[in-house]
Image (cartoon, rainbow, N blue to C red; front, side):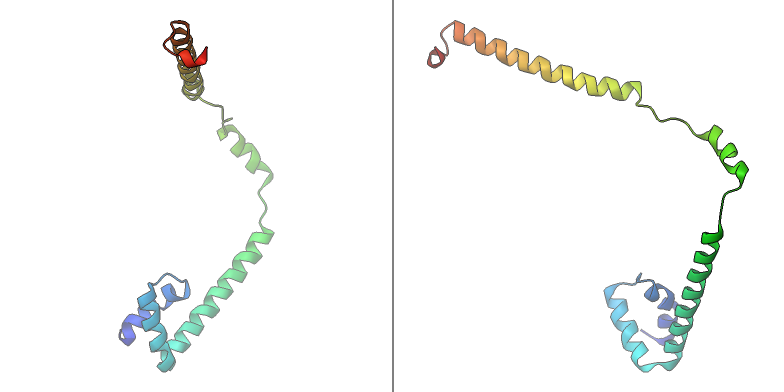
Length: 119
């Protein structure tokens, strides 16, 4: 990997977004290239500065008093859909019917003597 390719991948390298093979090649290049080492340090500094600025702004952020009033009409209470309730109920009914059919079949077989071991 040449100097230009490494330089283009430094931000992705810093974010852990390069392949294992690329990471090995980049680290090999960084070991001997002062220019790329300086560029990587500059990227780290810029990343940390941005991170601190975002933290600082986020801690001061507060919604306006009107924000809730503007958001509230758009919120919809989530209720289970009729189709969901029907499906869930349907499977209970199907399971109940299967159990009843099995029990009736066993009772008939037992009553007719086909299942003599149960008597």
